Image (cartoon, rainbow, N blue to C red; front, top):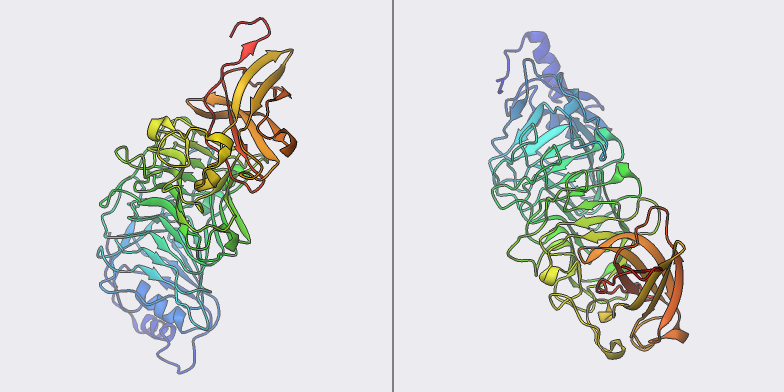
Length: 514
């Protein structure tokens, strides 16, 4: 629905001119500026409200009170003014709108946004200004589509917070809006995308090369849907084959902090249905030592919101180059990317992707990661690999682990025997890695096997240097509810370099029947 500027009475005209800063030479004080029509210019327009907000020295809010039944579409004919200072643009102030009420484990999003800002298909949308006084902007309850990119984060120092927005989709979140966008959000500054409150969750889809391209500021991405529709049940590809990746992280930018997801269910991102490299792409020139904090925790990558249905990332015809989490051309710095964790809620579910769950795309020495506690299963890498260090497909162990490459080519544990007796699991295994090739002690994790990947963690052992390359027998107490099914194991050295999964090994019960 589009409403042209209504005729202004003398009193309203004076108020509009006062808000526009035309009746006084000094800067206009902080204010709530209200958009009352969908026109592109004049008093009461979004463009004029941004211009007026830029003229103030304090925090401002742009609210909406457009008469009639929404949703309402604002279509700028030319690029909007850059956003400056401290500013909130709040679409949820429009009557008839409401924020989402659902948590990540309750489904998709039930928000009803009423304000849509749509572009000509090839121009910038909202751009934060940098400089000596960088912008600090909160966008809330907006539908933003048709731009390229939709939001530009400005120079280092700018801060962007996005809560309750639909980016790249229609107002109901069920379809993509065509654009030439190469990314939904590009930021060189600080980014808070989403949050742990239901009203803070965003939807990003149909985003070209990436829904989010993280820059060199603190970045927190939590509670969002990235690549699906608002119902979190299907992929939402668009005019340029969906998102090129869900989240692109440049590890050469030296972020002080980057967190994708979190240990609580409320922080879980659903990252599914993205094309190109897949769910999360990690690349750059410095490696992960540049980060004071780097976390990828608790996300669902490649599934629907329940974690039980497939919404794969990547392309089915290029599993060698895509997957759930892809490392690509990251420089060597002995700082593997930590993926997952041992604490409650820290494990990622990485499943059903077109390509490996975690993939070193080129097998370079710097393409390294610490796979800790994650559930990685049903992925379709070359040879059905769930973790792939390159070259493509399952990598055989080599004598003494003398090879190099991603994660130092860490050899996987060779399981020789596994017997369940009296609720305990007795395992005999060895890791053929010399102390010269791997940093000891090795962490060896044993999991339930799920299609060559892993289910629940059954137990962990520390493989000491004194036992290097020798058989070792351990006894693990099975966790409550754990099933005695075929096992897989992963070895991780003291630097955090993880192996691929071992081949599945059948468990022998105490009565000698499998």
